[in-house]
Length: 337
Image (tube, rainbow, N blue to C red; front, top):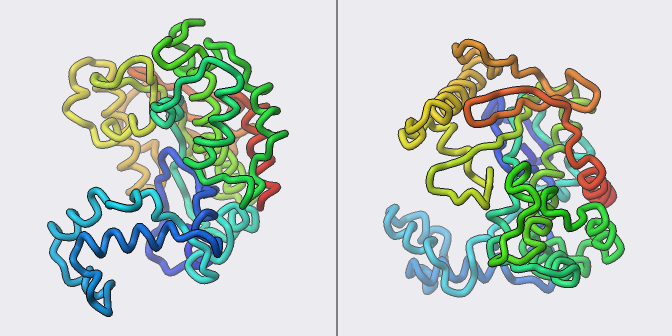
């Protein structure tokens, strides 16, 4: 949708966007004269593929079969695969994703877009926070490295912003991930501030930008946006992680694993049918399941309207949860753009 300034080559007529916005800051680390991360990853891949001794390394990769390519990309030796992210080249990516979004330089098409409630739990697996100092250090160190929102290269969130976010996301466990579960309990193995930290992580990396994109596409450009918020469970995912990143995927594909209870089976049936309905009709409501609330376009109410997907239940809501914190994060995105 962002490629070539949003140019329309009639390659697709709509999009389904799950768990992530186009406002990534990850391009930035690779768009500097001092960074060699993307090239290091490429060198690792061609070395593993046995293509590093040829003059046409890309041609060599293209000549390989699937097994050889898969093996080369599976575990890069000198650089992780997350180093392959958008790089501004003035052509494929004309400007930063945030700038293009704010300028309307994206493919203007109908979309289904949304996120899971507890995106940040999976993204905070390695954290163990029991103090403001650790949480702040995580935001300024690990989190910014993870998302490459590094203040020395892009003033996305500066030190003052980080302090403001700590104020907007106080250490009240019941207000953190997983939302609506475990009351005010904490998880000692992850620290007494893990729920707070996971909430901040999910909102910065995924949820804030997703809301911003929904608002801009709907209210600035009058595009049909069907936005969802999913609060799901999965048999093999610990309850501590809640409706975590990626949990919606087996529901979308109506996995047989979800046939174990009537509630999960119903949700998988509705989600898979709604996604197919959107693909065919550009409307997720032609799913044929009775007694399901209508999934309305996001712009139907001033704050935007979400279709809320639960386990065996569905509803609608105004898109206002954690408004103060998410709006503050989005103000930084807008400032960058």
